[in-house]
Image (cartoon, rainbow, N blue to C red; front, side, top):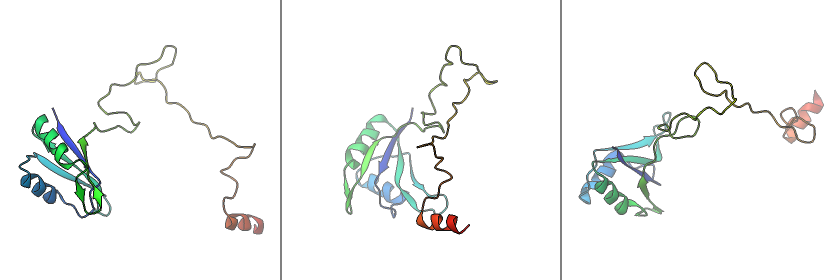
Length: 141
C-alpha cells in the first residue's frame, strides 16, 4: 500500500534535498521525495510527492506541512490521489461496463463518442476571421 503525500504550492527553487532536510529537521521519515519538473526546462512545476513508510507518518507529514508558510505562500499537503488515465478517470478503475444495445469494438468496449463541431447563427466560426488584422487580410485577398 502506498502512503504518498502531495506537497504543493512550492517555490520553483525547492529541491528534493530541501524537502528531505525539512523532514529530517522535524524527525519525519520519507522513503522518497520527487519534485515534479517541466521536461523541457527542468524547472520545478511547484509540487512534489513524498512517499511515507506508514499511514501514521503520512498523516504527520500532512499535519506539519499543510498550510505551512514559506516565503509569501502557504504550502499545501494532502494524501495524493491515484494517477489519472488519458480519459480523466483514475487509472486503477476498471473499464466501464458496456451499455445494453451498444455495439462493441474488437476489444469489447463501446465505441468512442463522436464530437461534432457546433455552428452558431448558421456560420462556421472556424472559417471566420477572428481579429482586425485577419479581417483586413481577408479584404485584401
